[in-house]
Image 1: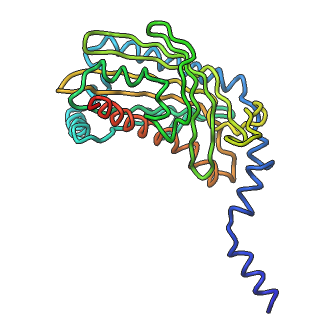
Image 2: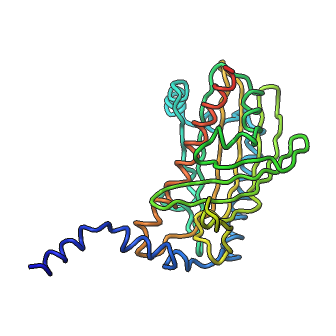
Image 3: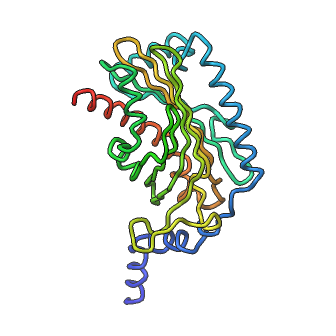
Length: 285
């Protein structure tokens, strides 16, 4: 009877202790291979096409992607934006609406938009360029942020991201950012992550950046495009983020899938909502 009771108690114990911990600490996740050259080349080829698309649409009459939608969808999205919602669209990088699967990696491409009423273009740009305070505007996703160099419309910025989805991942990033004024009411920017490193033991005495061979591959590359247009009594803010992550090994979809597949969309949605909140708050101060 005691043996039977012990067996029942075993299955009542948290599954996390028996499955997650061995995977994260020295198990499958710790043995993820480094980013492959072929994977990186494929990502850069994809980013090149996105950059060309973005550049061409800057010259079109429709500055924002929402204006290219069919009338019914466009009107519905504008109504959501005026109500303070964030509109998100998945740009299909792969087949069947899924991320593009490369050899050893996946490309994620999402774009979104928010409307900030009663503000000017310069107010929005001021918040986006205020990188020394991004840890306040975008907490808890941004844990630390500082301007490392600034020359006119060109910035080099350090940002530390903390993201949680079953597992918590802390990333140190170095980003190169350029802003462009397209007209008195329009502006855009391009941000490239020059360096991304996972952090081991964040906040503890043994904190350090992991070696590439130790990383889990939750974020290898990141490219971001912002657009701002002042009209309709406020400013429309658009963001497209293209990221490269590891693929999902067979049998680990339950652990890695929620992070790899949902974090890009959720992060973009949070970033746009936080931008709206920060601009409205600074506008009132």
